[in-house]
Image (cartoon, rainbow, N blue to C red; front, top):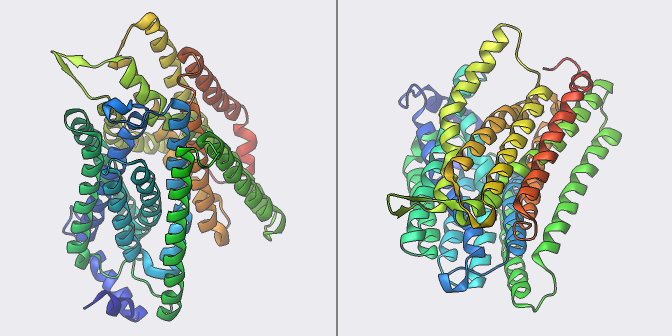
Length: 509
């Protein structure tokens, strides 16, 4: 049966098809469709993290070595804009799936955009580099939120442990791709060429798409569009025109800026982007509180979400420096020579994913063990702990960069310890944030609140890029000391306000 015919099937048949997929237990006790989504997401993350590991290194490398020769201020701004828009575009990506094509097709189309973006970056011209970034942003916005939605749809009527276990398995696929990618792509960059590395990331996405198409029969009707086909076609035509205009305008604007024809710096664009994202989030919270029709308890809980939003933005502004300042530290002042062989700097980008794979089950067990003894920390306390651990990681980098004074190099162990602390902070904050928003948000605003929540990640990524731009203009111990003070200080401040925040949560843990 064709895709179009499947999209037009009635709701009863769609439910039956999804239920049949859910009854399948061929993949470690789970539906075989989970393996399809697992490996599709693994290859998508392979493409994303492989490219991310090279991005700032490529932009700051000299033209003689095949790079773009940007200074760190410009490279950090471009990096921040790119990573922030990747998350920001999850909002329209969810809308496109709901109103135009369904999650199933959104994932496929998004993967095509991502692959095209990576292959564009394999072409050694500045215009194709910028075009590639724009295509990847659009593609990731379509794929990332919707493939997660499809995981949940494989378990109709099951909101218990089996669905939770499925998401844990799916999360391992994400981190498996994030672990492998810097190793493969970084090696090719060092031994062959930057653009071969970018192209390899595209090959990874193509492999994921092939797996996704072949395995589509195991997904039942998960992710099928069930709206009005005529309205969807009309919206689809408008969407295609809008995408073409946006891609052309952004790519042309960035290229004109890089050649001096447009007098707007990447740093100014990043600053403006931060104001816009922060302003939109603030306006949304104000609107919901004032005109959202909330009762007193709901208003308090939305106020708690706003506190968590601010803490999340601060956290990701530090954590996402893994791809900017910490990547530059690995490249420029870290001794990576072992037995006469130099390890690619990008390989250290795999450390966080390895720690996630190793420690995620430990943290899951720890929270359950503490809960049984009525000792589990509250959500604001976990947030505070995450921020303090993040700050501790940057405190390690203060001592590392002091040791690198006078042209000395540091051992890779300094970065490994930093990433260990950052990973523990991530596991204390990130999963908790997603869960807490779904519990605190008024039912009629859950989807919107989740979208706004991802705006905090987007804002944090933008700030991380701007901090990365200070790598050459500020002494590194001062830079990392400032980041440590801000992130750990935010954690301590939240720690002092745990009790008031818990009161805002009105009985929700």
